[in-house]
Image (cartoon, rainbow, N blue to C red):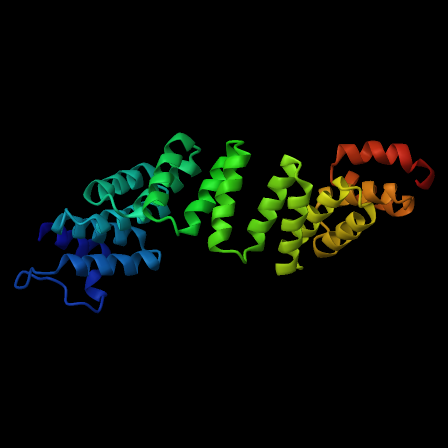
Length: 280
């Protein structure tokens, strides 16, 4: 009762529409603590939620879901070390839940502790191989580590589960581009654009691939569309300038180089000096 009285004093829980415990009725259940904690968490009342989750845990310390949810709250509070401790306790009580390992991996990945993130994710995938978000995070980690082939496998696994995701088609296109497989890169880039033709980055990826294939006219057209959708990216201007120069469109190229140079692209400054002096 002393802990509960402290809760009532600090957080004003008497205002909630619940039958709160009293000296005459101390049987406020752990689930009531838990559900009220979730409500407070969802409404951003983190300190109140923390106290309520803790009360639920004190009432039933063998319930893993209580630790997991308090861990999620602690994550939202940027208290990562404590969140990891709660996730570890949830796993100790129940090793069969993929989401517990996933939650661990998210924190390890954010802290770039990839040697800890990867085993946690692999365990999660072992339990829940149909969870596409696990494959997505695995791919991102492998990509950050420079393991391009590992990332490729993970993103392909994701797309087997969610084939209509243009952002992941674009990721595959960029990976195939980096591996020099322009045929597969082009196919994935075209799929991404078929699914979403309003994304400037997809047009840029496509243009980059076409430039490697020597299809300068199509690449320049892709750059133009990318710039129509997003005129803020200096990389778009630089690639457009190179393609325009290849096509003999020097005036257009110099305009792109000027914009890229103004955005701080040193390579654009060099090309501008070489090709655009007469137009300055």
